[in-house]
Length: 212
Image 1 (cartoon, rainbow, N blue to C red):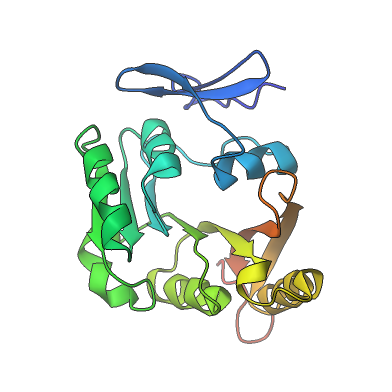
Image 2 (image 1 turned 60 degrees about the horizontal axis):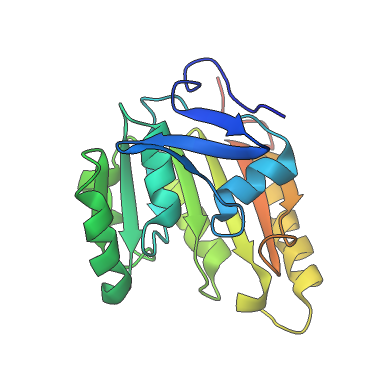
């Protein structure tokens, strides 16, 4: 299935059943076994959700494998990439040399104010981290930045190795208390113990959406 959409087809295509993004050096495969974001695209059957000028806050950038594909697809926007590991950041800085729209920040995602200069006004919040309180970190950053949409990659074994299914169910219930739109996708085929949650429309005080 071709998941291209108007506005990004210049940078995203399907070839031989694989998604590819157009990098500064040409087209390259986007491997769902190495990137949970593209695993979510396969599992959810959604089109790529962001415009080329989108501003993204990416929590858990690691060495930059997925971040680089996001930069390919948002060439007129910016990607604030947060990573706490100095070792991973060293690799991410190498990736950043190829992308003017990539803003790497070495800091802890528990403290959203620390990267406000890079992430202010973000449209989209993406998180892929392994901390035990990963759901709380996502909600804290959403509350601070108020993006329009988000995608939470939840690693259940990082919270409880004994009952990962129950962990995912509980997380979904918690998210549904806060957001009007919560869509869960099973990506365990490509990333064991993981699920992805597409998020939109925070609820108001009386359960109504936050949209006017």
